[in-house]
Image 1 (cartoon, rainbow, N blue to C red):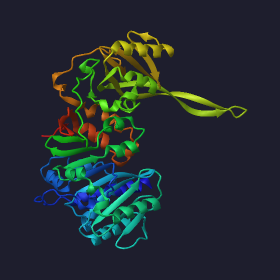
Image 2: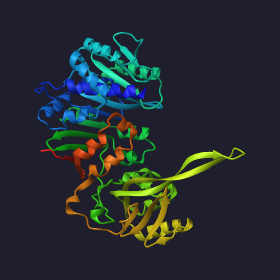
Image 3: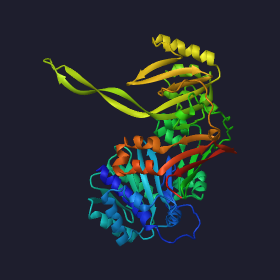
Image 4: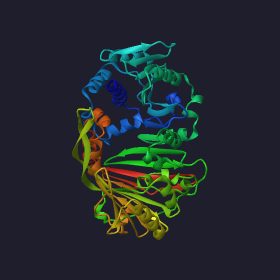
Length: 497
C-alpha cells in the first residue's frame, strides 16, 4: 500500500509539472492562497515555482525532462500521459506546496495544489480510479475525500484547492482523513499565512524554495544529532534555489526573532593533508549552546565523540566554538553479524556468526581547544580507566569493526576513522578560506543513496543522476545582517554549458 501512496504523490507533482509548460511568464510573485491548508506549526514547507520552472525548461536551465523521466516508474509515466489527454484542472501557474507538520504523537506529509477547475480535477480522479482502488469517504459537500485502497493515503479537494495527506508513521486512514478535512476547512487566519516570516519568504524570487521552523523540527527529530546541530538556536531558516546554465544557485537565510550576536569567524580545522579531503562542513557551536546543562553536548557533531554526557560537560569549558567535519575517501572494514541460529537438545539458541565488509567514506570530527593541556589530561584519565593505551599519540577504539582514533594536538581534539589523519594542524588551500561547506557529490553520494531503499525505490536512477550530473557544492561563510545570517550556495553541474 505504501507503493500506492508514493505513486499517487509523485503523479500529482509530476503531472502538475508537465502541465505547467505553457507561456505564463508575465505575472509577478504572489502569496499562494492555497497555503491556507498548511497549519501554523508546519515544520517544513517546500515550494515549486511552476511559472519560473517552465521558463527554465524553455531556456534549458535544468536537467532535461528526458533524464528525469528515465527515473520514473512506468505507472507514473502512464498517469502523465493520461493527464495530458484529459487535463487535471490544476492551476498550472500556481506554486506546488509540500509540507510536514506534527499533531500530537503523529506527523503528516501534505501536498497542496491550487485548482482552477474542480470539476475537471474530479475527471482526473476518475482516470486514476481505473488503475487504483479509491474509496470515497463521506464528508459534507463541497468537501470530497478519497482513501487509496486500504492505505492511509488520503486526498481531497474543495472548489479552490486539492490536498494530499499521508501519515509519517502508523496513523490509520480515519485519523488521516480527519486531519485532511480539518486542513481543507480552515481559513487563512488558522494557517501559516499568519506567519510574517513565511509570507515574506513566499514573495521572494526563486525556482524552488524551502522554509523551516527549527523548533518544530527539533521537537519531532529529538534523536537526530545532525538536525539538532544544524537547527538549534534559530527561529526560521529558508532556502531559495535558482537554476542557471551549468549550476544551481541557492541562498540560505537563518533568522532569529531576537537580535543575536553573530558567531565569531573561526578558521577551518585541518588535521591532515588537504589532498586527503573529499569535502568538509564547518558547523559553528554557538555560545548559546552552552547556556543550559548538556545543551552543547546535544549539538552535532559533539555527540560523535566517544564520551558520556558527564564527560562532554567537563570538556565544554576547554573547547571553543570551532568545529569541522571532514570527509575522506572510502574505507572498508569487517563487521560481524549473526547469520543464523541453531538449537541444542535443551532448545538453547546457538548463534552462527559471520562477517561482511562494510564500505563508507572516512570521516574526521575536529574541535578547537582553549586548554589543550587540561583536555589531554582529562581524556588520558578516561582512557586509562577503560584500559585503552595511547599509541603513537592516539587512542584507538574499535567500533563495530571500524578502528577509530582519538587525538589531542595543536589545540585540536580529533576523532577520526581516516588512517591519514595525524591530528596536527595543516595549512588549508586559500580558496577554502571563505567556505563553510565543500562537497564533491560524485565521490560519495552515489554510495550513500544506494543504501536508501525508500529513495531508490521511487527513483531508481537517482544515485546515477546525482553522480553523473553534480560536480561540486560549496557554501560561503554566513554574512550577518541585523537578526539574520545569509550564505550563498553553489552547485556546479557536469557537462553543462
